[in-house]
Image (tube, rainbow, N blue to C red; front, side, top):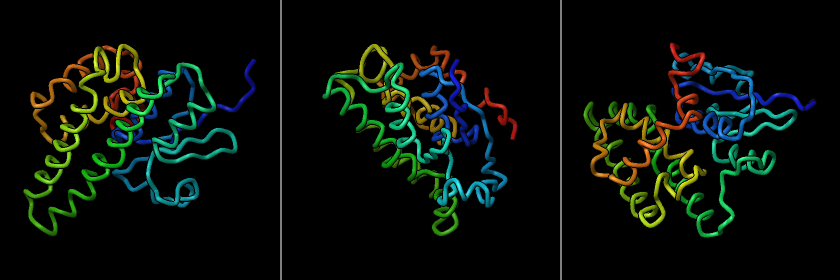
Length: 216
């Protein structure tokens, strides 16, 4: 019997960064305790959460005495500690592609359309500018991603199997379509693989509406 302590995930149902980690945990078949941190209510500013992550961002993964924040760092940690159902392929070229896609999503797209930033732009520049800014950032990133995966994408972004690129892309696409009215017809490859994501049970189980704090 496995006596290791259960993983604990501090996250928020509607956070796309949290969604990535839930998706990865599901794919790896790892049980975890769900700890909701309601960003809308400011629970990330509580002292106990700040002790876990001084940046006060979700997600945070606790594995015994190991605490890891930031979704990319968490996924890389999971790959090392729990290698079952690998999320990075053995082929160096495809591995690099997966890491590049993940990095683009988590550093060049998602942080630049965070709601706090969009609201700040609206306050400083004008009520319509926040949405226009977000749309321009997302479309620029999606055009780049289309080009990156065009020679590799089949059922999923880098081939027939789900990998880290998909774990980052699936929540990103779902989120921006809902929040920012992105016309996905401009991105046929991403649109096609997203339809495949929607058939994956682990993705559906990780979606915001399937989480215990979905109504928060």
